Image (cartoon, rainbow, N blue to C red; front, side):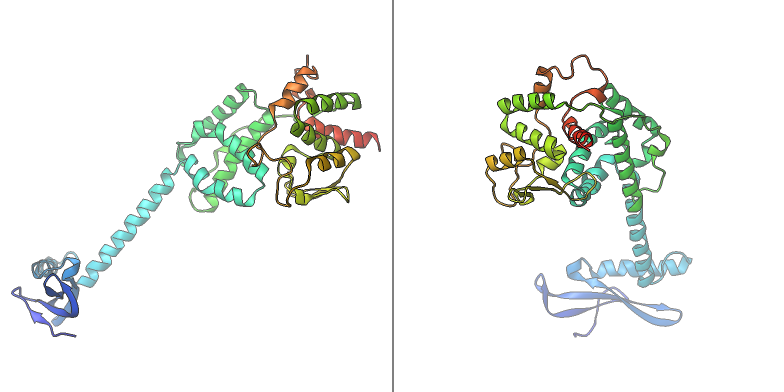
Length: 351
């Protein structure tokens, strides 16, 4: 290591780097010398390549001497660095607090909550949450969590109800909002109370009462078969095996054992796998579709991807058959879920 060299500024010295150049000269490391409690003290400042010069070092030395003279501020570089480090830490803490105070519902949902939900929840559950978010986002998406009030949630309830959404669907939307707030609290992002706790949940009786007679079911399947083979096949699976729509959408050929006559439904609503016995018609249907590779979807979209919702063909056929004519109570209307309800009702009838 090279020896220290005095500069024209009293108390400022430097040493040269053995090999590294800064400009045409070897890089210089500046230090300052001063008296502290009657003893000589020397502290390093930094390299010329980092922006230090003899005059800048001298200005820092004069600052420390002035602080000592008036008895205020840091009197050593070590003290000054600690103070500056403390300021930086406080600024970082203040910035972090500001971010937590101003984080919006949209940001925490799209950037944090939903990506984790996609990893841990079933495809059907995340599709449902994404659909519910479309009602939530316009009202509270741009609002910080701390500023979301029960009044905002009442507005979401009103919007959904006015657009014909069932009370149960409104309840699901409020439950999703609660989950996001709980996520924020569990991860130290939010410390307040959840506004959902101050909102009255809508009352509902969402239980489907309508099920098809054997004659109605035969009519429905016959017309569906003429309109759309895919919709007919999925309807047949639901009617004969009790599969939900999402379970049919995500069904893969690995879950279909035609020889054993067993269908394995994995992405179920309660998260449990269940096995269903095939009827003769269901066996014929799977054979007709010509089994593909194990990871292939049995009922892919036209683009080969997972189907997201029931085809309008089903609703059109139900209307053409006048199954819902003159019926106002939604519980008595024929919808896709009526197929699963019919399956269960027929089982009960057969003991």
